[in-house]
Amino acid sequence: MFRQFFLLASFLLVSSQALAGTIATVDFQRAVTETDEGKSAQKRIDTMYETRRSEIEKMQAELEQEMKDFQSRAMILSDGARAEAEQSLMAKQQRFQQTAMQYEGELQQQYGVLLQELDTKMRSLAITIAKEKQFDLVIDSAVVVYHGGDVVDMTSDLVTKYNAIHK
Image (cartoon, rainbow, N blue to C red; front, side, top):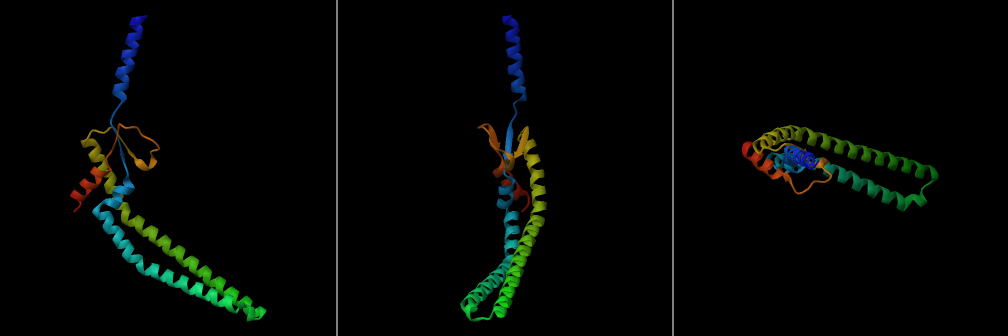
């Protein structure tokens, strides 16, 4: 009986050691934004949309001023003139909201396009690093809820190697 228990315990110990491998995580979002290429892409996006942002701010300021003007003279307007002014303000507010949403959508789409290729190259390089360092499993840290102390974060290695390769 003792011998069977000893053999079973030995088998479980060996099996658990064989199954235990090195696990790594990568914060791809952080890695993308920390690479030189990612920073450059972000600057291009910021420059491209600075004009759009100032246009939205101008539209918002004009709308706010028109609302203040309307509020200050609403009491002296006839019912028809007040209703017409309210409709005009509502239409301008809708145009403002549509324009702001359109610009935001364009910004997100452009950001996605610029960083899609970078993300693909990052993931490919992560596989290369994982093989070099003999990691058994690499997980995107965006999906990790918890990990113990034996998990390696390879994000910094990925950024450093990516910048060295893609100068």
